[in-house]
Image (cartoon, rainbow, N blue to C red; front, side, top):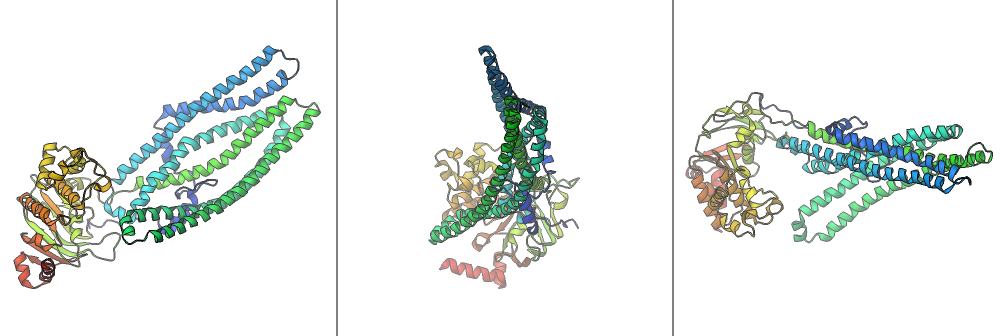
Length: 620
């Protein structure tokens, strides 16, 4: 059946949540990041594939890395020369000057190389993150609403921010650190072998003694970090919930209670972080004891060799400096692996968003809707269940034929399935049974974009964007002129307050249109639909937020606009649908009555009872 689309799956299942967190957190991370799912570095292929689109910047970054690593290793060598020659007692001022001039030159090269490396790797990090965010957002805009029923937009937003920040750190810092320390470690070990093979052998034997406790503590830190990330997520969820309902909190005087709740959440986060910090402190102590203890032993043995005349003082000085560089490089590499694992996890979570495919997509060969548009709609034996509520049928064996130019009012109790009809007409979902046709063409055979181009919607709540008035008004017709915008605003009774705005159409309306009252927001939404000038109008409680005077003016304007257009009206206020050609009464997803206002009022059914209750309440 054409409507048999699989239910969208959550990006991560509840059972996978802890595994996701476990693999997400770096072994040695100071601050746990969102939990990735990956336990290998494979997901980073997507990140590095994006970076490879910029070969010039990569080449310059690698060149800078080679220069800085070589300059870093050249410093101990110059110290060896200075100590052995300049402090020998036989050197003249010119030799001493040359020795230090070479050292200063190396320092200058190191500084310039570091600056170039930082610029290019940071540029790559920012560019890669920007590209990934653009790709993810492009894909998110293609996904059907069913996807967002089972995947929280807040959690997706977290991926777009915190996970991309992890990737930025991997590309802009971690990879650079890894390459630099790998080059420094390999080059340093080679230089150590050149300086003192026997001392180098002892140093290499001691390296596993440092790595073993790092791995041991790292596993424990990873487990605690998983819990820590859960607690941080709790803080974010709490803050979002309370700030979104601040008017309710203050209206009911619950500031103190919410403060106590937040304190409890924060203290839980702190306690988990304290355990993680304690483990890191213990690991740091062990590593420092082993690393610097090993350095002391090497210096001790080297001092004996110097005393015996086996090596020079400059050699032991260069050996200690280089050994420190090698130890630091190896230590940094252990942290790098944790960061790379965390980045791989973040990349896998973003890859899930990139790989998600819309449940509602154009057919391979979409059937064109007839021109010119007629505006007919047909529902035949439609049954539909929302993906998030598969056990409840929103519509059951729903059949309705709507002729071009007809005005249909859809009424019924809350939950009867009224808004579901609009969702199906816009093909945000496909029914599990039955067919829906527009101008004779099954919606599943047409391009969703072409379907929606023939619709104009006024939602129950006037949804506005964080933009100026002009952009909100022309959202349905982006190339509309100011004259067309003002005409639509005039018809929707929105012109007067829009002209009174400080900058007119250029006035920023705030997040969600907060600069306007609820009634004003609704009138802007109506003007937006008017401007679209579509053959089919969907009015979902279009006048619900208006005062009596504005409602009368807008209703009059809508009646003029509906002439020659097919209109579906959802209304709880039955006084607004008396003039409809037909009133369809829904109850529990089924049509229980249909007819004119007068006929249904005389029939004594559900509509008559609803009308009697409502008109009595209005009279009171």
